[in-house]
Amino acid sequence: VTKKYKSGKPAIDVDEKGCGFVYYPNGKIAIAFSSNKGGIHAFMRDQGSKLLAEFNPEGIGSVYNRKGVTTLYTTRKNLINCNEDGSRKDYWYWEGKKMLTETISLTLNNFMTLEIGSLDAMFVTFSAEDVSQRFSIGRRMRRSSNYLDNRKTIFSAAPAQKVFSAADISNEAIRTVA
Image (cartoon, rainbow, N blue to C red; front, side, top):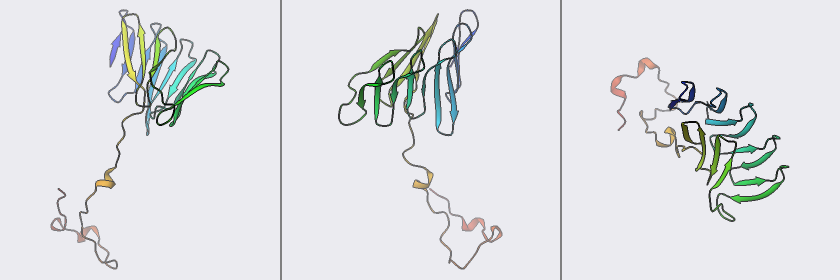
C-alpha cells in the first residue's frame, strides 16, 4: 500500500509483506511495521515519537497513556483494561468465562483509533487529511502443521550397517513423491 498526501509527501508506504511506515502529514512516523522471524510487529507513536501502543504478531501488546503508563494490554489469555495509574480496572478472557462480547474502541490520538474484538480481530485505523487506512494488527494466521508433519519417505530404509555416499545413489533409486 502506497499513498501520498495532496502535498506529495508520503502518507503510507507498506510493502506486500506488511513492513513499512505510516506518516503524519508533518513527515514524522505514526506507525512502524517491522518484521522478524515471528511475523510483523506494529508500533504506534505520537508526533513527538512517544510510544502509544505496540503489538506483536500474536496480538499481544500494550497501549500507553501520555505519561507512558500501560492503560490496556493483551495476553494470550485475556485483555486487561487499566486505570490511569496502571492498576487493573477490568479484564476479559478470549475464551471461556467473562468473554469480551463487544469490540473495544480506543482513540490513541487525533489520527489513530484502535479496535479490539479478539486476538484475531485487532485493527488500527489511521486518518489524516485525505488519507485513511485500516490495518490488521491482531494474531496472524499461522500454519497448523509444518512440512515434517506431511512428509513422505523418498528412500527405503537401508540396513543400519550400510552407509551410502552421494555417488552410490542413482536417479533410479529416487522415487517421485506424489
